[in-house]
Length: 273
Length: 278
Image 1 (spheres, rainbow over the protein chains, first blue to last red):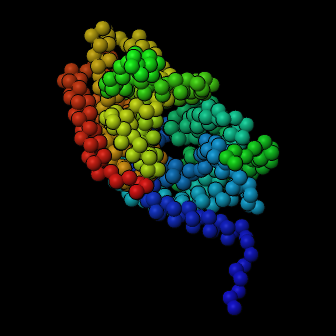
Image 2: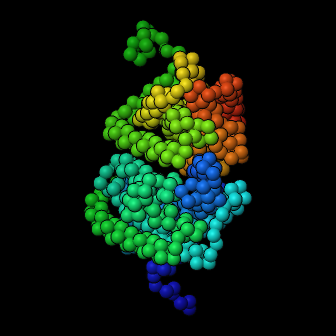
Image 3: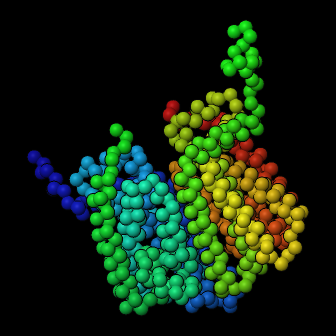
């Protein structure tokens, strides 16, 4: 007689969810690659702009040499594909199509289902990213100060960035339970991210007060912080305080999410029956 | 009905089938009226467009904090590029993207047959079925940005520039429509909808800056494969009085070539289309 499989456990659920995410992205690898290419245009545009500016200024700008800028934006591409999260406007679709019923009838919180799916799909994205990074490295000649500490702490920082961004997007998605016009709000947050995360430009090139404000918002910890850890621009102290900020933001926004979620599902009236 | 019922038969005569222009006009009108029902969307779109414009302006301002000229482009000239990017982008989001999205969903769901079996030109029908009219706001904001940019320029810009600009922007918009349609047609069997649009729109974002600043391989791609150079940079050069007129003529030729090419690709696609539901 075969032994029944062990009972449910969260790590096992995550492993299974991640496998599903992985398999799905492998099936649609051409589509994932097309999407990756679409993402790549953005950093290449920024890199071209800032390289032009840097060269006009004698090869350096705001403490970044042309090679360091190249390194910044190449690592940017990895961070970008890594910190993809569940888009807030997709909640509208879930609610409108009555898909929420499916989630709410399960004992486990949908956060785990979505999170595990995104975790699994990340591995495919990173595999697709490797050859692209190779081509970018040959084309733009980045300069990175390698160290084992940086590489190891980067592994923590990039997962931390994903946790912050995923939780932030998930929390924003809750707006859809109150209004169908959430798009404007998301637009504001995405604009905030673009300017205050180091996504558009390293924050050192922005006015000093912007850099000050950005340190107290979540955006920087999802983009610029992991990038700077990798390319070796931070001290050990800065790295550990940054990881502390990532933990604080994830827990803080996670707690707010739990409070909002309870109210959201009370408001929710099923559609599609 | 000897004399014909006026309300039904138009006074005893059936009206002739609508020509392509009238058919397109009617579809666009219905599409626009459908969207106009949702008035609150106007404010949402306006807010989104203003946010996007503000972000773009900040990006340009940050660049010019560090330099006076970006590979020969002064700040007002770069504003003109951004304005044209908004105008053509507004056109894309109002008229092209919603139709491409519908086309690709139809292919996926097997409902394209309903369009292909109608007794009118199928390319025309798939191109005018939906209009996201509130995105016209981007086109208006874009015109405003170009106007402001011109007022800040030292070059003298006259009516001839304005007329040439209008021709170049129209050609650019037609070129972009053709490329998007051809890409969607070729993707009938290969790719998921959201990713193709993501790729094309990602490429379009590169047009926000003059193509001359990009590395050779990207500049060449944006001149030959997805000719944003002609759709955006050339009109901006015309209105900034820094154009080589041969480029403008080439832009007209590129638009004609792209339209013909998309027609050929569409015919090929329809001929080889076997339906997803079959």
